[in-house]
Image (cartoon, rainbow, N blue to C red; front, side, top):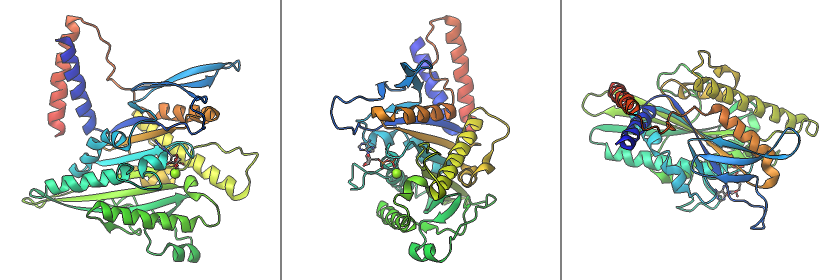
Length: 386
Ligand code: ADP
Ligand code: MG
């Protein structure tokens, strides 16, 4: 009986969390690419929620450190598995919630793989971006008798604290004429904070694929001078949803930001100069600002420092409050990556909200009673939130 009560309690707790502002952190470990099957890894152990990595101790000896997150996906996790846990979050966008999904990690750790997929896209390879939109299309069709939805997307890049439109019809022209930096305005009521960027209606996954290709092409145009700008800029696919109640005519807005962040690796300041140093400083600053914002939301701090970077300014309405945040933290498992892996996990640990889920098992009757009371209040909270 106790176990069932505990389970029911946890389920309700999760449902309430689904409705309120919450921050989840999922960790994904990509396959080891160092060649030999028996090659060393900096990941010592993983299970469903805990990852243990190599971490040198103070006296220089090799130690271990464990981190706990909402979920850990190992090297063999499929794109479909990774997506399945984000589905409820994505569906809430149609109910008028704002959602942010981030991919964080050093360059080469699998951020783009998770969000978009491998270079040669196959059905199974489709990343979170495509699956999320596919889900929204399907669900909006199911609801069309009651709510008529319009779904449109924007695709932006933030590079050196400048916002650019990846869906500008001709990126070449944009790039060669002026820097074309776009303004962020946080006051709009429809959630469109970059009104000057193209907003393109989409009806099916095929529309999304062609837009992503255009965005990718423009991104390549922007990067001609340097070889891989994509790892040093943030890219953000924003999905705007407007739903109109067929009978009452009431309108709701929801939005979802799918962000492939710049590589989090620290750049050795003694080795880089000029443009490269400037880029590194901008990246450090904006990732630190994102960390600060999420950490202050997680700790329910009264001041949230949104203004410290373009990234957090852009996402302001979708971070905190009733919004839902999910961070995919990516780990490269090769032994040589242990320094970056450790700092990535430390960043993630800082932004993760402490979970009530791991309630201790203690078969005490008073505790069962308390849990039952908690269930009643959670049920009430759930009903009120709906
Ligand atoms: P990032 O965007 O973080 O720089 P990528 O997503 O480009 O990294 O990943 C680097 C390489 O590793 C790519 O070739 C990618 O296809 C591959 N890769 C990443 N994650 C996985 C995974 N989970 N399974 C298989 N290959 C992966
Ligand atoms: Mg990438």
